Image (spheres, rainbow over the protein chains, first blue to last red):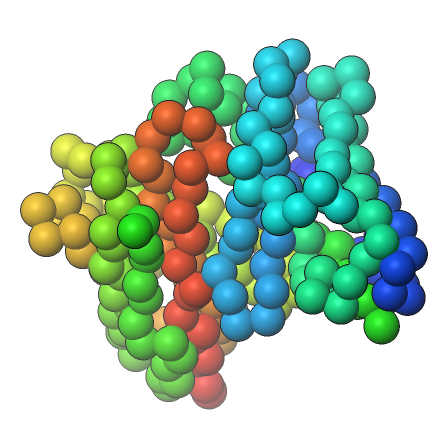
Length: 118
Length: 113
């Protein structure tokens, strides 16, 4: 596709339910990132995938959060037993080279998924 | 602690006027500094990326400056347009893992006719 796409655009769920958020990066980009943006806050890093390397999971806030990237392309962020504090916009970004390129590798962001936990 | 502070938090200007947004950071080590524009309901879009050796970089009506000694950056918008209304986010990279990007909370700019 022309850009990074995410689905769903909006998700409302009840506390305790599991949710899956999907990200389709730009074709050919080796690096993929997940961020969380809470109201009035800056973007919070969650997880980073670089090609076939082990992902950098240092930003995941708890073991309820997990992510995978299949075939080096599509990624799914899963939140188990959702809590109200998980409500936020979840943004995905991809970049051509990630760590294997220049440090100024440009990130391209998707439109985000707005998650509301009731 | 690695931090990126932006000011002002919000700003209202009239169409056609210029404005300057500020970013101070304490990230170390420093690799590069980025400015993003985020329209409401959209993902951020990269405006400029500057490394340690770059003092200024322009992208159309947007000009970013960097003083790595004082750890300050500014984003100057010339001849503002209604479409400039957005949040402007300063991001500092500490190098290493691409996950090591520290995001500011952004400045919300409103351009009025």
